[in-house]
Image: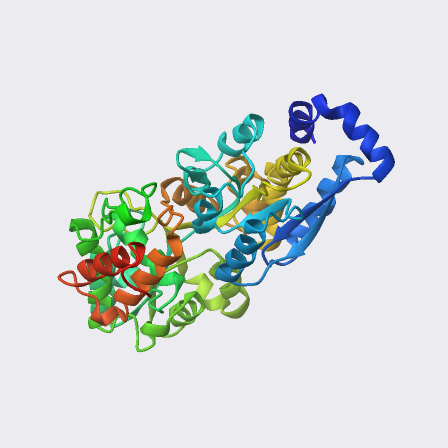
Length: 422
């Protein structure tokens, strides 16, 4: 309530007379919030913020498609048509630059920028940027942890209180005749894995993301890119990801981890609640740690995901929409959303909420991971980059440090220059 009033004072006071007159004639303004599917948490926040607005506005939600690519397509088409009905959007971070570059997102007011950056995990801030500006506002964030079977780690002689490397995990799984839970399917989850490995090795998939398409330079054909390819190729070639690795997504990795051959897994926090319900015996033997390092002693760069909030540039209620955004992202709402829907906060304060601490014993590890996390390539041409990676780094057993980084560089560069098609 305090934050909403703060932002209201900054954004609305100068328009108070005009807004009051319009409200008297037309009734309370309705803001449409396009949400990604969840367990009802965004609807609950919309209702709460509507009540707190005390007649200044009301929020209605409109459900986007389930997969991120379809969400991107629907919003991009409607914004390209200057659709004024799009007020607030829940956006998957990789698609933020694509909407920001052509001016489809309304500028974030200074006060809301403060709320979206102060006391917010760094990974979420980085994912909300484009061209050195905050163009969306972090709502909830997500990251992958290293999950492990305590019994396997102990048998392999690994001290999980200290950072571990991919090489150590590969050797431990091999020596214990166990399997690693990783995502090798030809989909977005493979891009997530590749990017985390490259970033953990100190590299970047794109070195100049703001450049025109025909001038984009890739950093894959590098020591970092080759280190990433070495890890993926070795896991695939040695069969450590299981026979289903080429089609393994996050759920398949979780099921492998829960089986008799499970050992270590990189995955999102949803697995804790899912396994607590389906495999409580596994949870008793399960620990968690930060994402594995590529080079011993060099801090890892875990994946970052989640949802940022954008306001449509063609909305009739930009100021009110940002006032609503300030309410939505309050630490109290983020903590409630984590507890009820399992989606981690971007707000550091929310991690101190007693309900969060009780429900998620790994919450502090999630928070720390989000401080280290690195977004996937921030580029308006993300779709081409991601699909190019999937085309050249699949199946995992065929990935080679000698060929895959170079092949990906050639294909993606050709696509961006209009010389090839995916």
